[in-house]
Each structure stands twice: as structure tokens, then as C-alpha cells.
Image (cartoon, rainbow, N blue to C red; front, side, top):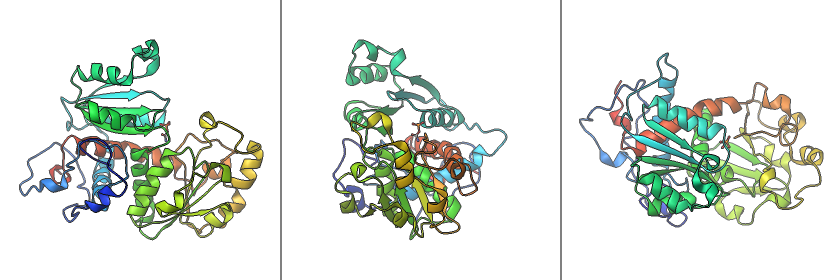
Length: 354
Ligand code: CP
């Protein structure tokens, strides 16, 4: 959730719901920050960090999505750069590999005119045993305004938020959350379907190791979707039903009548044992095959956060076919991350000048 420190308990944001009445659909251009005459500070995010989706209200999620829509317009222009974060310094602190998230944050930062530094373990003193806290404090000593962190340890962004001054953005922590992925998924669903409420959304795959799953469950339920999840019984964590989703071991049942099918990657690097006999068997039993996809609504869309294991969790032809919005998710990630950085820096959607 967006917060001042630490992580509150589940549902805290829902208890603190704020009015979204001043959230307006995105203005169609972004030039520079200008004073908002009838500014309502409550609609600017009060929280300093984006650590997760859990606890965000519907109004806060809508604010992110509406602001991203305005930035998507900017990204379609011939000149994509705006001076909004000129003079701000952002450190991208990526302690796990990433293609989409890291590039997307870097592009978003450059389009907002921020100064950026990208930091990876191979090129840092982490290889010499420096702790997360010492590394972060040394980065902080150089006065960045924001730190975007990806880390294999669940809770690492929350730890930084408690101990460091800059705004912290979670770019994926362990098996916990990946909030900007869920926001870009929601943005894509809204662009394609016009709404999220009352859609049947099937999320299928390695549920146990997926931070994307957790962030999406929090977001989609808050926005009123009907969420069903499925995957191998060995990869379904306990307690999912308690979050408010339907759980089925039959992928065919999950896909039946779905508006949106979100496939999750088999996280080979996080498997500790043989959760399924072979990749071929996984595809036959749990993968998105053409036969299985025919059970979804005729206008269903296929999503995947990437990276994909083609022929394991998804038929390659479906991944490249007309129902797939997988590359549009990547495109939308830039606008969503621009919105996150902009709002955390204190921008409001009302300050976006046309
Ligand atoms: N979706 C996602 O997080 O991809 P990367 O690991 O490439 O950033």
C-alpha cells in the first residue's frame, strides 16, 4: 500500500477509503506542473511510497489508472519527453534480473526528465558482502528523491521505507507483491474492456511463487472483479480463498466464460522440488491450449506478465495471436510507471496541464 512507514495489516486501506470524486479522466496532454486553482490535496497521494497494492482504496487505484491514461497520450506523441521531474534523482536498485520492469522504469524516468542511476548487484559492493541497509544508506547519502527496488526478499521495500528518506517504489519483492505490474494489468484490462468491475478474470499457473498474483488479487477484488485462480495443486498456496477468490484445480473450469485469462509463469528459479512431473505434462494439464481457450468468452483477452515459457504455460500461437495483449501490457507499463513516479513526487492529476 501507499504509506508513510512499514506495512499496515490487511484491509487497512479499505478502512481508510477516501473520496475519489475529484479523480477526473486523464487530461490529454502533459506539459508541465502548473498551480491547480481549486486544488484538493486529498486527491494527491498522501502516502510517500508504493510498497504494494494491499490496502489501496478503489479511489487510489483509479487515480493511478487515470493519471496513467494521461501519460499514455504523451507516449504517443512524436516528442515524448516532459519536464515534470526535472531536477529529481531516481535510483533503480535492481537486485534481481529484470527486462520489462527495469527498462520500463528507466524509460518512464527519462520521459519525465528525471536524472537516473541504475544499480545492479554485479556492479556493486553487494558482491563484497555489504548489507541491504548499508547499501541503501550509502545511496541515500547521495540524496536521491526516489528509490525503485526489486529484491528477492519479500518485505525489502518496506524495510527501506522504514530506514531511508527517499520515496520507495516496489518493483517486485520476493513472492510478495509487484504493484506496478498489477496496475499496468488493470490499465490494460480497462483499455480493452472499458471496465474491471464484474469481469470474470481467470489467473492460472504457478500461484505459489507469484508476486504478480498477490498484487492482482488485491487490485482486481478492490475494483469489483470476479477472480478465479487455478494451477497444479502443488503450486497453490493455502489461504487464497480467504482473500476472496474462487479456487479450482480444473483449469477448464477456470477458463469457462472468462473475459480475461492471465497466465502466470512457472518460476523455475524458485522451485524447490518436483511440483509437476514434466513440462509436457504441465502444458497438457494446466497450460493455455487452443482447445482450452475456446471455452472462454469469444472476446476474451490473454495476458501474461512475462517472461513467458512458450509451450509450457501457454501455446505459442495463442501468445502471438489476436486475443493476446501481452505486448500491450509492456507498452502500458511505461505510462503506469510515469504515473506512479509523478504522483509520488507530489503531482496531482489536476495539475496536469493541457
Ligand atoms: N513482468 C516482469 O516483472 O518482468 P521482468 O522480470 O522482466 O521485469
